[in-house]
Amino acid sequence: MRHFSDPAQAHHAPIRELHNGGWMDFAESPARFAALLDALGPGEPARDFGIEPILAVHDPAYVTFLREAHDLWRAAGREGDAMGYVFPVVARRALALDRIDAKIGAFSMDASTPIAAGTWAAAYGGAQSALTALDAVLTGDAASLALCRPPGHHCGADYMGGYCYLNNAAIAARAAQARGVRRIAILDVDYHHGNGTQDIFYDDGEVLFASIHADPKTDFPFYWGHADERGSGQGEGATLNLPLPQGTDWAGYAPALDTALDAVRAHGPDLLIVSYGADTFAEDPISHFRLVREDYTAMGGTIATLDLPTLVVMEGGYAVDALGGNLAAFLRGMDG
Ligand code: SP5
Ligand code: ZN
Image (cartoon, rainbow, N blue to C red; front, side, top):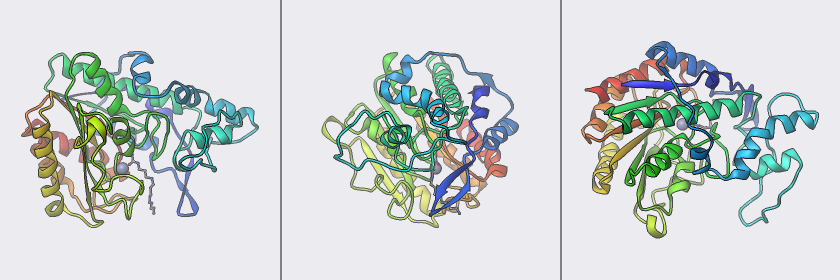
């Protein structure tokens, strides 16, 4: 299948993230993007569909914040990457405060999503990659791939988190709906629960969100992704969470994938969007599943049995040396 990306995606380069009370090197590194291009070739450039499809998902005040945050940080006399350290808890008043630290806290959920000089341009380019790959599917390709980086599935309509700033899968889903493809399934196979995507579509009965991920009792993002979260209102039953324990291998994973695919079939979508993360890999440095290379081919092959027009959007995967090979193995399965 064809793949799409934007060169700006290489220039988002935060230095470090806060984790378990200490600093670690930022795991979502530019080297990931280089590894994907190395393995798959340069692919095709993203076209620019403008800001409107981004604003169909994200709050305008949040988008303005993302664009300005690094400049505001520098204007406050700070060095390095913009990063929050105070976060409003649920039910605090929404206050439109000016201090950069107050803004960051209000628009984010964690301290592992720094804003560097190139962050906005990279996130914007990634979203355009998703929109360009979507266009390929809507104009006749059976499947296409957006090499998004930074990833998207942890950020919601008005917050960033988990290395994510713009929700590429959600932006593509809303853009497809604007073009008349109303019924959509998003299948999220990243190691982490896609809390942002879930939040965006929680009340929406047209978009199924089905996710297989590490149990949030033990893993990020902790507060979402539990099995009893099933959607609300019109969206009740259109969210499916399949948490699995640390240590899960393909024997444990495959039945959950079958359950997710049954839900996709029952939903009857006209488009499938796969949020693909390779951080389920046994050697991933920040994750704890035990999938191996050949399992990704099996995963892709199983998903292909749905026989739906499919957009694959890149999410996580931090074993950089294996990342391109793992994605290529998945695509081999998808392509049959
Ligand atoms: C898109 C995506 O995969 N985002 C993941 C964000 C996870 N952030 C918190 C990671 C916790 C990592 N545990 C690290 C152990 C390092 N020894
Ligand atoms: Zn992940």
